[in-house]
Image (tube, rainbow, N blue to C red; front, side, top):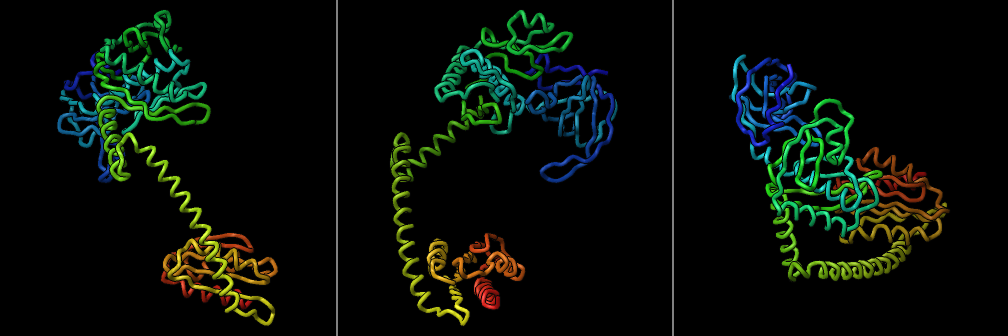
Length: 406
């Protein structure tokens, strides 16, 4: 028996009475608090919307049971609940906050998609209503920042006019003659949602009664997704909360930078330039320090009888940023292997001159088999980080033994 979908004609229906047709146990359902027993219920009619067309399902209650999920099974709608129901009539209650939020997002999507198609020739090929943000994927050339702002402005202009949003029924041919935005091949009578003088689109979802109830459309950003362009947006209460959060964040950034929110971008650009200059100076100073330290280490480490010089150093007070330039400087010396470990962090860098002829990759592999850590590299250069920094000294001792025993 097909379920009568009450939401088709009244998306604002929150409470209803239905007859329980069946209630069967199913596999437990995962929830944030763990898996719980579940039953699948079929009703003769329902106001609960199932997940479909990019819109998530409703939640709420059937009698004393919680509705955990609502699924579209062709002609029937299955309600997944957390306790068994007895045959007979049952009162249902839809979670109105969730439903109205979804209505705002979905009608806002229809309006935004119609605006992108009419003004910029960019059809919507998919829609997703997420828990925080909604997205539409547009096909065609990349929408410019001006196009994104223009679509948002045009959609909000229709919202402020508070145009009616109506449900219409007709065949595919009848809807096509009325100027439907997206034609479908389905037979029989179809349901379509019409935004007066703005959009007509086949849709089985829930929608507001007028554009003013959308509240506001806020376009966030646009990114490349395969061959399409994904536009993030949010509507209604979500848009209000997100805009408020954005302003508070911008204000806090301004306070940190001791400037007004309007000056934040300029202040960030200035701070970024200063940071880049400081990093450049730091790298130059680090290279100079590495050169000086390398000379001292070379002088303090005479070569072995076979001419191989193994420089092993445990860095303690120095920055770990010294590891790489110091290893590079040491490797410039003939037949020299550099084994450097930073004790506070457990980071290590091994390098060598080409004439040293030690397989440092093999050395590292043997080392990490005894002293746990992660890393890799080539025959002449490896980097790693120990799982336990307190083993830095032991790791250096073992690495030195592995090199000098080769």
